[in-house]
Image (cartoon, rainbow, N blue to C red; front, side, top):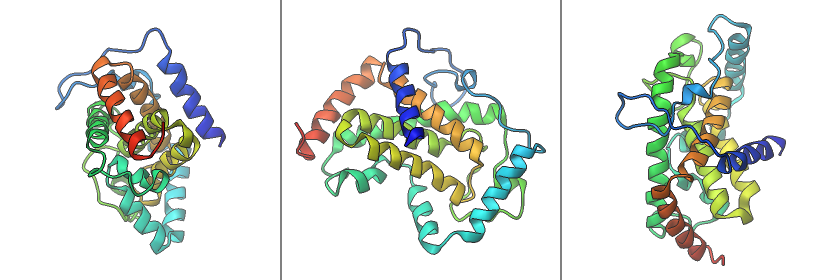
Length: 232
């Protein structure tokens, strides 16, 4: 609960901040909202005690993960905001919510634009590329590990959906944290990748909601979503 509250308070603080960052790295498929490396500390060195502890955590989870945990990690490996249907209900789907689907797709695209340059900058190898004992149960990625794009996107979508449906704020933020945790279960990320991704996700959500073009689409999607959910 404390972590969810801290993330949401950071989100609200950024939403009201006077000077949100605009500097961006170039050279990728899209222009990121801002330079994420200005807001993240470097990842732990690969020979550090912290990385050793993070690898130990991944290997311990690997030993204890059940078929149900594997299935959940694989399901959440798909980057879609409709993973939150277990919070918002069966009507939360792309067919009934085309405007919401389009908005979430824009969040996903913005996440890639934001995290790809940072991943290349920090150049941290994936756990399974660094240590052959790690056996991922999710699809392997060719991108670098820090920060986690899944944690960034999942946290951003959780924050934006919580902004749209504050009645379910706590459950949505909890689901966003659970979504991030699945990347450790899957063997795809270190713990510090997840923490950095969660911070990046809050920054991304706040940045998007300060853009006039995104906010216009957001308002339409919000009305659509609340109407389908039967909320005033």
